[in-house]
Length: 161
Image (cartoon, rainbow, N blue to C red; front, side):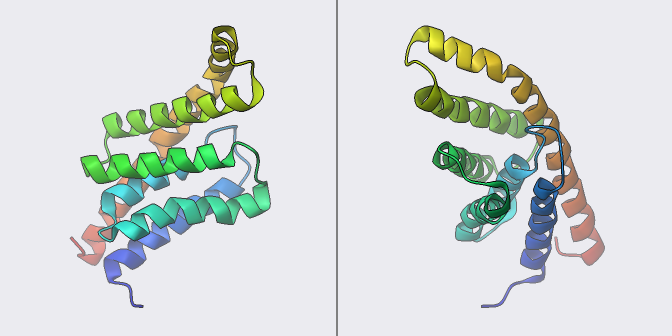
């Protein structure tokens, strides 16, 4: 199996972003949403687009730990990758949509697993998650910009585009 220059650059950017997940950071200020959107947007081979965020999560979760909510979190990132594939762009709209998708899906999972399955339980779950949502948006915008502009710079520098 051989990789093109473009694929090597893409994988390199994903690996660096993934390593950032292992560095201490504020809760939910992490690169994986950006990685999922980036992979869906830029990988030509869709199997790599789908595998990149999943492999990133598995590789880092080995060190950080798995939980009951892990399948829902992984499903969230698959959905975000699909957003990248569908829109074929990373911009503030797709980043915020990705943040919202992660917030909604992951908190629905938390609600089902850990809260009473009532309107009050749902409201409590989502209300308590708002500070994490703010952090997610900040991290998603930061890491998405880093990946996008870094990749654009690298492709121009290496004349890949």
